[in-house]
Image 1: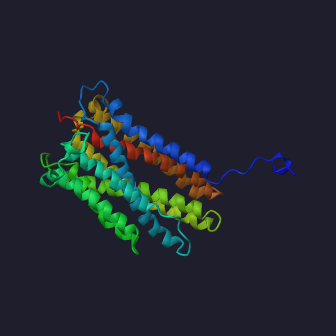
Image 2 (image 1 turned 135 degrees about the vertical axis):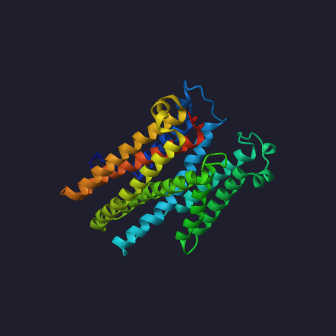
Image 3 (image 1 turned 135 degrees about the horizontal axis):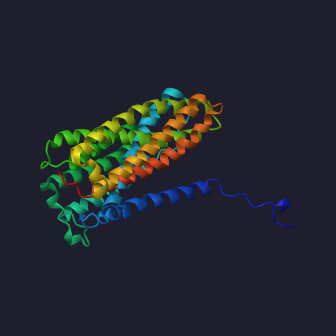
Length: 331
């Protein structure tokens, strides 16, 4: 007797294989932005970047993504409990994200320990010197914070990981504005709000979409309600991100020089790319919200929401590139 399927039907494909391939493709595409983005941004500007800027941007992309995933799961989980407390959430990714963030923070700390150069051997690292510098201390704070966050994800209160994640965000805000800058605390405060809102926006949408997929058969109406609730909160987050981003950009580039520096400096070019991506994200968010309000089939809002989270991943990568590039000159 033949073992072939009746009627010549092809064997059933493994469920989820297509999604896994799609995720791998997206991850690979996202990695290309920090690896090759700095070189493209610096082309013909006459500026010199730090050695290994592509690798540093990639590590910072992983670090930012890890914060987004963990903060988003806590934030979206809170929204989900308000909408459908009886529904089972999807499997958390926080544990994997925290260890990925730990590895990225460890890599960035090794760069600081090597005098802001890419270390090629262990002898190039001055671990003890990390405790004597501001950048070294902040790097160690991030490494330890991700380690604590990883332990929190395995505890009975995984939401406690928000505390060490807050330490990472504070450390990043302080690192971005050294003491040599004018009014560094103002810049750090703007960056703190900007990063916090961005992490909740990006990570929250990712986890909301994962919940929609998990509830598509058991509670589709609850999934649509959750997306609507998230959209209302995301509008406030987007307003805060826009306001703080605009203020930060004007602190880096005075109004009289903005238009010129947006095309003539690596920082300006990358900032312009980020602004355009955020505009695309905002347009997709508006489309999703309109479909939630007016369409007969409200699940049609899922399509622009999925595109929005992909565009947001690109925004995270471009933001990481922005932190690795030389700052524009204040003319």
